[in-house]
Length: 136
Image (cartoon, rainbow, N blue to C red; front, top):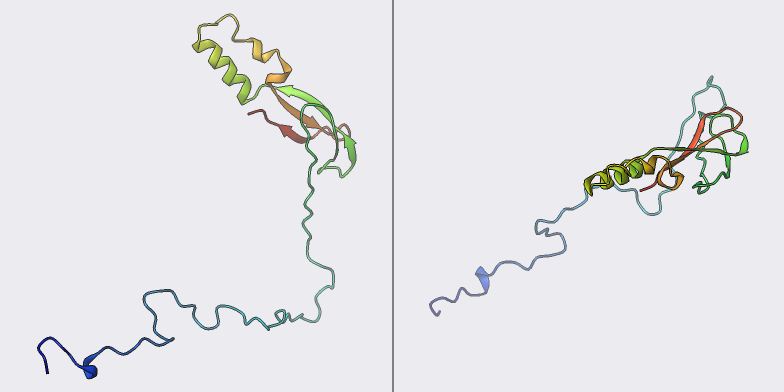
């Protein structure tokens, strides 16, 4: 035999399908089989047949500057909201920007302009906050 040639008996075996080269192999039993049905649920006798609490998700329409129709999450009535302008992040950012540019006399103007403030939507029945439209 030649020097440096190992011959067929010392060659490493061909990796078969069961060989894993450092990759993650899912352990048996972690994933349900594709033809498995829904999981079995056992009910105990003597328990009430009423379902457990159900969480309802109420999708708000896009309430922005003007009053809009929405369902109040507190009193569950469909109402047209009442709006109120409140100073928010944009109001303070404009005030700070005007101050940095030397307009000390004008820095309070954003607190008087409704289009610079956040809009708080309230239910006219229970007077609780339904939605806050934040600028910025």
